[in-house]
Amino acid sequence: MIIAKNIFIVWVFIFPYTMLIACKENTNPENLSALTDSTKQKHILLKSEQSKPIVPKLDTVKYDQKLADLANGDTTGRWPVKNQPYPLAEAILPFKRIIAYYGNLYSKKMGILGELPPDEMLAKLDGEVRAWEKVDSLTPVQPALHYIAVVAQGSPGKDGKYRYRMPETQIDSVLHIAKKRDAIVFLDIQVALSDIRSELPLLEKYLKLPQVHLGIDPEFSMKTGLRPGTKIGTYDAADINYCSDYLAKLVRDNHLTPKVFVVHRFTKNMVTNSKSIKLHPEVQLVMNMDGWGEPELKRGSYRHFIYMEPVQFTGFKLFYKNDLKKTPHHMMAPDELMKLKPRPIYVQYQ
Image 1 (cartoon, rainbow, N blue to C red):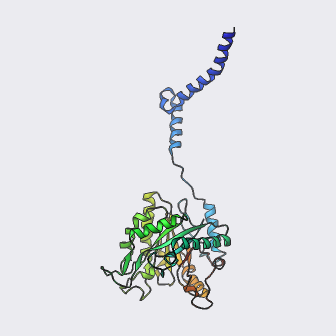
Image 2: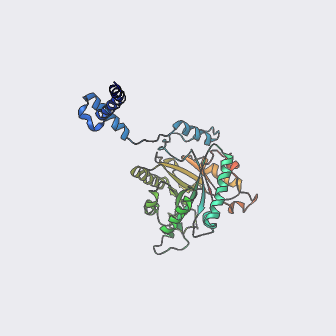
Image 3: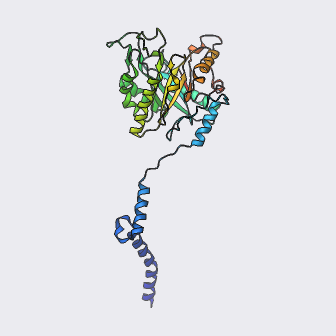
């Protein structure tokens, strides 16, 4: 009797387990031959769903709200820009404000990026990041290094183009420095007597990296053939569209998140036919007020050349030295920039 009782107990505990194993074996996709046609179809669909990558989605409600916040109460209808496409998911703007340090590692005169040793420069950038986090706690800050990768020159060079392309070792150094702060990197192009179609493709290797973005400077696009620095240069919408199309294709082909594309501007003729500039889900375009001087002059440039000719997003450049040259010898602070219409979502320090 004891033996029979023990056998019964073992059977009670083992039978459900063996049935579970049998069910698992019968429902394993590799054992589809043991299933009915309808069950097979369910398993095929389930396996297909499980194999699909999770595609992040853009929060369009939050996106629209952030655009409205940036417009800062503008009632003219210019801002936010109408009929712009929603960006691909994981876009930086307008969810984060980019705070960038600008310059070149070869020169202490071209901006704060090259003026200070890297660790000292990054510590100073940290201070600006904290200042912006304090003045706008609802918008996280994305630190950035904005590096002049093609520099306009006073001498023609071997090919007579008056520009110097930075060696890859220098660009690699900037990427290494940026990594210390999880900063993104902008590669800026000053074409001089060259042209954007000749210079941009040479940086493709870097623009394929998810953390690398683009800047172009019309000031040094010398379409008239004059030496850089003798006159302010210009880009047309066609040049800007070429860059946007190029970046959009890179994003699609390499499954990247949207690229931020900065265009510097502080005069009307620096950008012609701005109404013809095209927008893409893969590219976020920033028109950056790049002029230096006293606060009222900078506000005026922003009103005339950025506010009055809306494209998509706006930026504002601050100069640690040049902005102090004239009365009142004052560089604008974050709380002052937050009063602008629209509020800049990209701020650059030189």
